[in-house]
Length: 141
Image 1 (cartoon, one colour):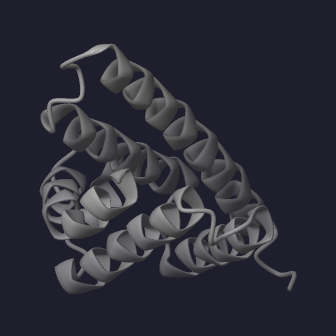
Image 2 (cartoon, rainbow, N blue to C red):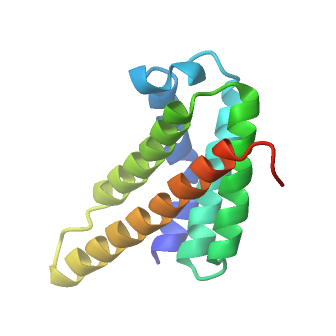
């Protein structure tokens, strides 16, 4: 159920993320970056989160994608702190979206929200780790 809701709202989540990432003080390298490329990138992250949440994506897929993201981000000239902050902002907007869907109506909804939060944290912790590894090992692979 959550997978379908997130997939159906990925455009809105992505646009909110772009609005913040291109103005936030921790992501200054993104301020003048091509918005269409940012949009495709965040959509790709949201898609991978959805696939992982739905059980169609495993840890090796996460590792490969985010390793390449880190490697590419370094080549583009972004600071690692900016890339990690941008990932954190994706996590923030994903969670804010989930909260805006009224996930606190009854006890079972609270458990679902807490489980979603746990999964968001796990996914983005792995994403940050593999992104940093890719960034640091830019000359490998």
